[in-house]
Length: 112
Image 1 (cartoon, one colour):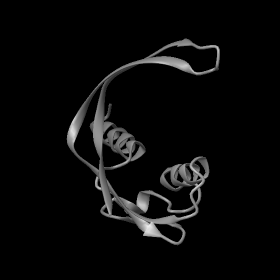
Image 2 (cartoon, rainbow, N blue to C red):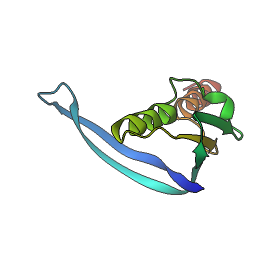
Image 3 (tube, rainbow, N blue to C red):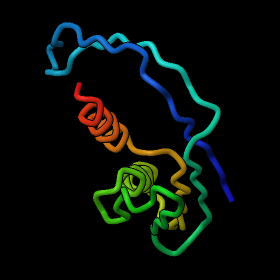
Image 4 (cartoon, rainbow, N blue to C red):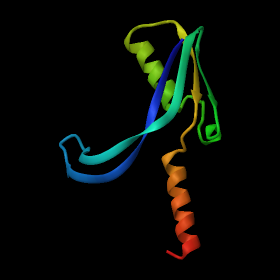
């Protein structure tokens, strides 16, 4: 079994700079990592599957549009691996969009 933590971060500053030739922008950012994060577990399996658990699991899809499954599939293809994996995500941290919605709601309550 493989277990990894994706530690959460807080963006303290984000500056979008010039557009590059490839269409993307250069970024400058300052951020701080938190001491907690979402936990991803993986064990060998016949096919790729993803179970999402935890307080904020309902905020995510475990369908083919999920970034974890897409990344796992890309790794399988890149390294020509036939084996699958049973993946389990313990969703501990809120999604950024949920945090932004909370901030907007608090501002409305304060009249800001």
